[in-house]
Image (tube, rainbow over all chains, first blue to last red; front, side, top):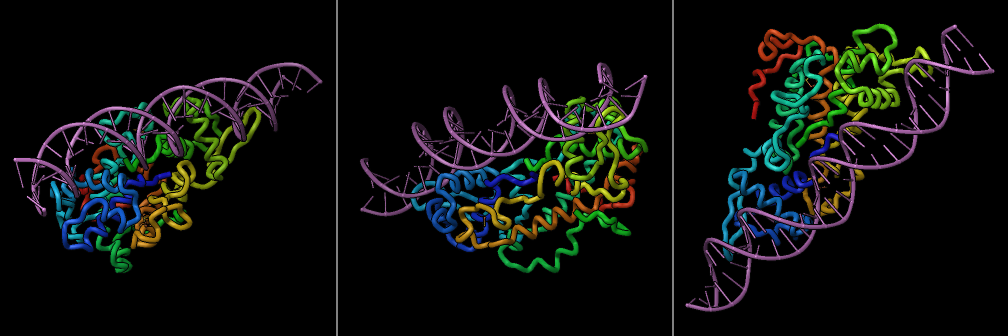
Length: 153
Length: 153
DNA sequence: CATAATTGGACCGAAACAGTACTGTTTCCT
DNA sequence: AGGAAACAGTACTGTTTCGGTCCAATTATG
Ligand code: FES
Ligand code: FES
């Protein structure tokens, strides 16, 4: 369905909420604050910690804190942290596509991948918090078509 | 992993190949032409037929034919036909997100969805066909990336 | 009308995903 | 120093989706 995992959804929610707090926050607190089940939010935070998106403080009175300001964390970063690399097709490079020799459109998917990554990298978590992204939407069309094809889904 | 299904990949390959032929084409022929296994390509064509992307002719001497010219079929259309609607998150509208009341960023995901759909709708199957094997990174056709696909995260 | 060719729809196994639970390590408070 | 709180890592299980296969419905041909 071309949907990212629910974990990523939770990750964004947790990160935005974490960015609104200035102190270290524990998983239970974050769970109550966001409504995400505690074990799940804990798992998400753990993954984010390994990826360096949040810093962790172990022990009592510990918790998590954003490693970077909210404005510098893009959606693409979060997705890559949770879901892994953004590669729409299995035959990007070194892929195991069995139709590679006859498919005809060699690595054209890379263009699509770049477009997706571009769009996702242009949105930061701050944009998710504030609703001030309308003016940036103009730059989200990754590959600008000259005439603009009549490709309207 | 934010990857679209392999079926969609096959669908694009099959559609591009189908666009190169002018007559109705059967699944076995298309399979030999693309290298995709016969049952799989048959399934893909079936789905595409139900979505109106290709027209089918049953019975002997039957086959498939493109319903629209290649230039009018966008990647987003194919993805939506195979993988279903492009909704990155489960909580777009009417979603069953259990954290909807407390998550804070109500429907901000719609913005991300729009960005993705925008990028995907800007690329047509004709763009996939018109590939330049010589230099696929620098010599992209009409849809030229702003700064090149340097977003190889 | 019989036959063959081809699509249409349903079925099933496999793999990835989401969620849960447990144990270990680290740090603060008493 | 001792105990408690909180993160870190791993492993397990149920569920969903995906990929592939099989059989039934339909139509041109001779
Ligand atoms: S290389 Fe995978 S479909 Fe072309
Ligand atoms: S509504 Fe689903 S995470 Fe906010």
